[in-house]
Image 1 (cartoon, chains in turn green, yellow, orange):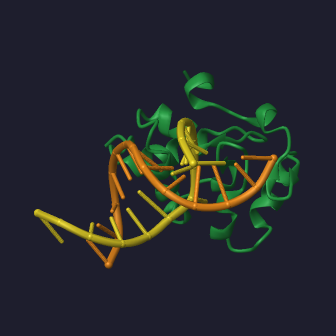
Image 2 (spheres, rainbow, N blue to C red):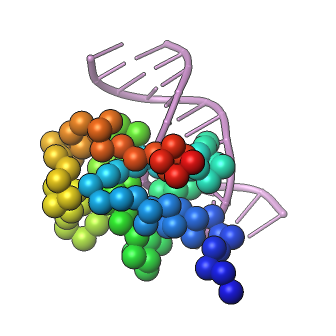
Length: 110
DNA sequence: GATTTGACTACTA
DNA sequence: GTAGTAGCCAAAT
């Protein structure tokens, strides 16, 4: 059985896992890649269950690179710590040079 | 089956 | 420039 999973959630997880080390993406970018560009919220929703999956949700931020979902992590700085651990600079819960670290699946994966 | 919610995004005041 | 509201879509209650 292919693990493609037709579920919207699984698609989000799949893309999130494809995010390369030291890169980040936005909910809208993933949503767009899934064909639901206007369902950026769905991506975040899917992330709610990402804890059961090995999904690097810390690499997924909002369109401005703000760590909006950090509240959903265990610690208050866990998300930032993970990002900094990958060489990404985080300032005030926001990714520095977000554009440089931005990884768009629709562009990178095409 | 209808209502609420939700880790977003964009527009408008 | 900041703040608030509206629009989207899909899942959970």
